[in-house]
Length: 291
Image (tube, rainbow, N blue to C red):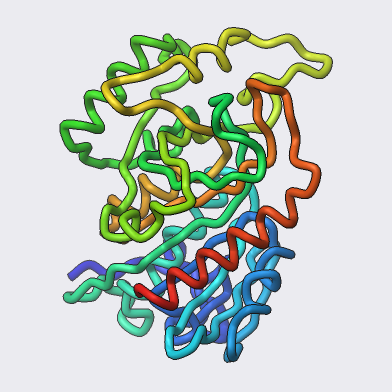
């Protein structure tokens, strides 16, 4: 089996993967990702016991227990580029032998659940509500650097989206579904729909400050997209990258969002932190009962 070069998989002096700075034994097989490094402690404060804490750059990781369930929470920072780092390094921690630098014969599937904030693209999905993403649809370019396979439903959705929005003039949209094995536990109390992942917060999400937009119709085209029962519920900056890399690497992924803005009604949450805290508690309760 081919050995992975030191320049490709960077392992530091303590035997930890370079950016996340964790060793294989320091992460659980159920992992919560959050964008904000300060949100890690807001999750781990609910753990019954914390056995490991670490931080490096924007990547903060805590591993501990909820009852008898071992769980890690790690911050990713913002955007698909950071997801590329975190998902690849989490996979390396469980599926590459750091001593021999070879891929393990028996691969491990992680449960990866994103807890984040998002903007609603449907009037009836109000601020302070929760969305569980059935699909992640990327209008960034991350997954176009990888070889991957889509199922028939994903191909149909991607083709219909491109035809509806004409965004293929500036990007090559990609789409991946959530893990059905995890999604089934996050139904009650959640809206559902396709989550669009953008490569930025302002222009790529249709916001105008001083610069005009090349795609001024973006919000309308996202809101009005529909194929069968599928429609776009919200957008943010990580979900499609998590779904794309996670599914391609054999992991089970789900993205959960607290809605802090409704871009149709032009509302913003009066207390987004409280909504996120409620989502954290709800998610941890479901993990403790079902994982």
